Amino acid sequence: MSEEREIPEDHVSAGNLMDSRTSHLDDELSERLEEAFHKTTFNIYLQDVAKIASEYNPIDLAYAASRLPPDARTVLYENLPDLEAKVSFMISTDGPTRSAIFRILSDEELKHLIEKMPADEAIWVLDDLPERHYRRVLDKLETKKALQIRELQKHSRNSAGRLMTNEFFAFPLETTIAEAASYIRENPGIDMTRRTFVLDEKGELQGFVPARNLIVNPPSLPLSQVMREVEHKASPEATREEVVDLVERYKIPALPIVNQENFLIGVITYEDIVEAIEDIADETIGLMAGTAEDVSEYDPVYRRFCSRAPWLLVTLFAGLVSASIMSYFQQIEPTLLALIVFFIPLINGMSGNVGVQCSTVLVRSMAIGVLSSGKKGEAALKEFTLGTMTGIFFGLLCGMIVYLLSDFSIGDFAGDSLQLGITVAFGILGASLTATTLGVASPFFFAKIGVDPALASGPIVTAFNDIMSMTMFFILSGILDSLLFS
Image (cartoon, rainbow, N blue to C red; front, side, top):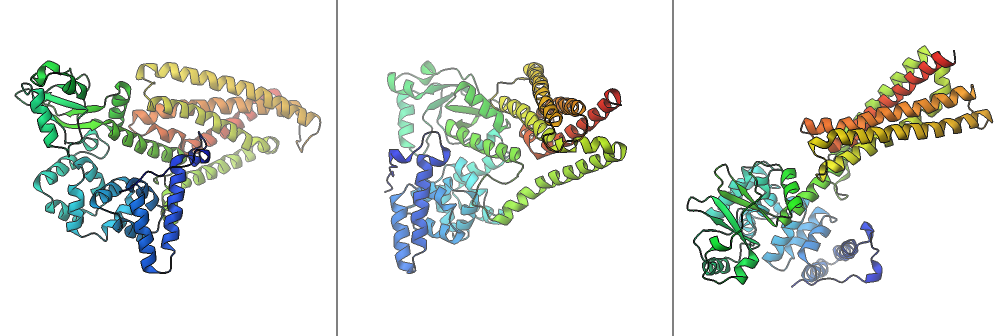
């Protein structure tokens, strides 16, 4: 039987994600596993691994397994104490670990493993199986379990239909509390007791009974007298984001999923929503960082490179475009370019941060549901105002500093001090306004075309922002040179 490992209080620094209780536990467990697998005698290291597998929670072992070589992951799995621990391990671990373990499991072993899992968990585990292997295992499963899994697989990966479980308690209106309680006791494998749903004679959803109502009311009462109205439900085609927003806003412990005829076909629990939020966060972080990889530090280097390289090509081509723009302006105004070329990194850095701030704030507001369609204009106006204030303040500040540096001959700045200061000031203002426009428009644009707005903070928009801001800087510099200093 696994036991909880205590982490000393003085080893935990509040607020530091790298110094949390779970991170200390992961480090301790990884260290013990590495020591065990480095033993020279085969029997000794197997004995140590088996001891570790029996002492720790299988969920903690599942996280630690991702740090081990593939062969070591399978050894750890084989030394888990019982089938229940193996089920918990497989549900909690990552895709590469499952794939490694699948290679050593027979179809019969995998069948026993899947039959012990809830159908909604089994479908995610089976997603890591090759298609032919998947079909073989499904054919071996008992008919009811196989049917449940096939029903869930019909729905797209990021839909409510895939998130839901089709194991729940639902009774006719006339069912008494005693009858419902008896059925629930006889089916301990169905972990869905927070809400018991009530159906009419046609099978349509009529209401739900909170768990407390089953306890405090007389056993002879029918469910129809203690049920509550279902205020919120969703269709299986609803997106993952829609379901998360609904459950989070109304704090729904069990969201019913109904088809077009209002028949109850599944339920999404709060735990399912937490997992969905984690997946959304991982994908969003990846998009904002400019990578298609899962956020994990233990994947092979070559795979991580292949997932990042396409995004970095965007930056490469953006740099070539920027160089072409600079070359073009050099042909038109070589003296002007020599004057302002030192400030291009400053302009790109300021504009990039201004644009990322705008887009990130808007993306966050969209993600947590505080920005509705009717508020888009108001939010955009606020960001434009902030962008203008930022451009004016930092433009004046930087212009004055550059003027003083040039006037006192500090640094290697050639040319007229006033011209240089005004040019840089207007350059920062123009670049900030350009970046604000792009930072405000891009999240709304991506949301409108059905693409994750997190791309607005990714390398595509960042690179485009650099090009636009630098071009604006050159154009304004040329206009000022022609109008004020010619």
